[in-house]
Image (cartoon, rainbow, N blue to C red; front, side, top):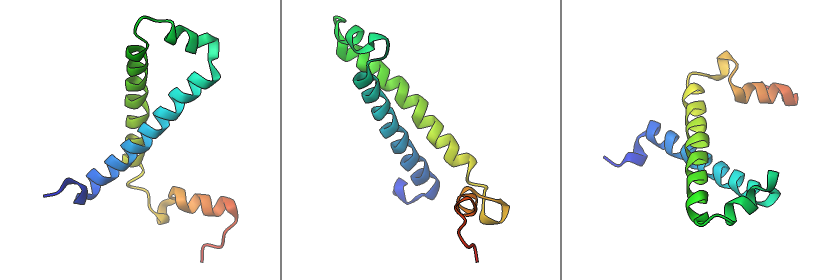
Length: 97
């Protein structure tokens, strides 16, 4: 059985990928914005690749699991019990009928 054909696995894989993209964006933003001279501290280390790898791994775990957890918790929500899609349409003033 191919794993991507299993709906739950596919849901988790997609959300893990979303979390990974967010992690990459956050690390890139930290390097670009350089808060508290972080970029200088990272690249002045003897092993900047190791520091970046640990930072990426930590962000990947954090944002990947947050995205997957959000997807799992949102599974039970449907249109009839005020799911996020319906709330977004109502907030935008769209006609639901």
